[in-house]
Length: 304
Image 1 (cartoon, rainbow, N blue to C red):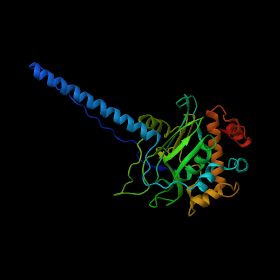
Image 2: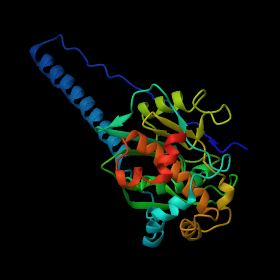
Image 3: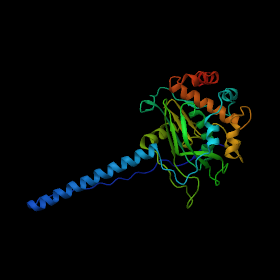
Image 4: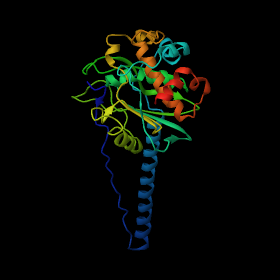
């Protein structure tokens, strides 16, 4: 079974035009027509400004919808895995743990002068549920999450009800990278489909179209989620390990396992995180040194 979920992430965009009426009559009519024309222009400009503001807000701090944030204990466990544990976890064994795929001869994807990491997933997706654990462990080596949202994958999908988090409503900051998470849909069906949470921008859709397809990912994974683009130098489509490793476990149990470097699911998550850390170190020119100089990370970089 492929470690991906399929979803349609390419929304259609419609546009309308406003025709400004002409004024070719008496001075009174010209004055009224001119005022009307400028009024329409002002309205169009206002609409454009509002749309830009909405778009910017979506891309940075989406508004949570009745969410429950992770407890301080769980948040600390997933964002502060001991270095000694990550070292002991190593890199796992393929195909149990899969490394990201290298992209060659592409310009570095950046935002605000920093390497940009893009994540496309959905709350309902069980493979996203599994991948977020490793991704959070990895990203926490370069910055910090001040909020993570408790989530489970859809109970109507395979590996139903997998305990995880959602990046929708989360807050992440880093001096080394920028992180753009997009959770496209909720985890609960309404009239047979999952309601939309976020819509990828044109730039994000372009990345999906180009890199979430052969030759960058396998045909079986093409178009699947989770999709991760690490600064256009590494990509992944699907989870690095099976969501079945988390089956029936509570969020607290999974979080507690992260400190157990030789016991699944913690060993799978930590090893997956090490591969992601190495890929990110590659695009940050091996900064911070205290992270990128670790033996397990240097070993992973040599194998990427």
